[in-house]
Every structure is written in structure tokens, then in C-alpha cells.
Length: 137
Image 1 (tube, one colour):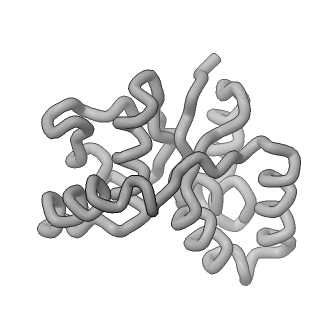
Image 2 (cartoon, one colour; image 1 turned 120 degrees about the vertical axis):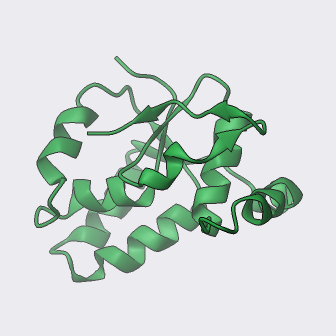
């Protein structure tokens, strides 16, 4: 079983929207993860927006949060400078605010892995040069 998993937007959307191409693979991989998955407010915001057209998608997101299967564990006010540095470092990718926050979360939780569908995370590094352990379906 996988512990201390950080969830990216695409994974949450694929989990809650059965029309998403990776839905089945995400559900299968989720069975290997010990809850809660960690995330940040920016990921929640992105997922909320993307789930507006999914049947009961936003309701499902709220349920994940209420049941503490998904937990927001990031404070941008405290971590603003490191996040801004990551955005600048990866401006050629370019890194979104959510991506930079997740990379910073990986630094703050050294034994974590990021569950993502986004190939940019193969480029990103934590602590300047350390590859981030990734979970992909």
C-alpha cells in the first residue's frame, strides 16, 4: 500500500468523472493508496472548475474532502517564496501555480509520491535536483 500520496488535479478529475479516459486506471491505482491523499487549494480550485460539467463531479469532490479522503495540507502564505522560485525555475515548461505547490509539497513531505497524469512532473525536481517519486496509472 502507498502512503503519503499527493494528488494532482488530473487524478481527482479522472476519479470523479467517468467520462475521463483514465478513469478506470485511476480508480484501480487508488485501491493501492492509503487515505488521505494530500493536496493544495490550487488543485482543489482547478478540479472544482473542471468538474462543473461532470455529473455530480463537484459533489464528489466535496464528499472526498468531507470524508477526509482528500486533505488540503499546504499554506501558500507560508510557502510563497519557495513556490515563486519554482515557478521561475520552471518557466520554460511552464509550471502552473498548482504544479509548483505540489513540487513544494513533495519537498515538505520527503517520503511522499505525487499521483499525477501530467508528464511535466517527470521534468520537475524537488530540492533542486532530486527526482520526485511519481505514481501514474
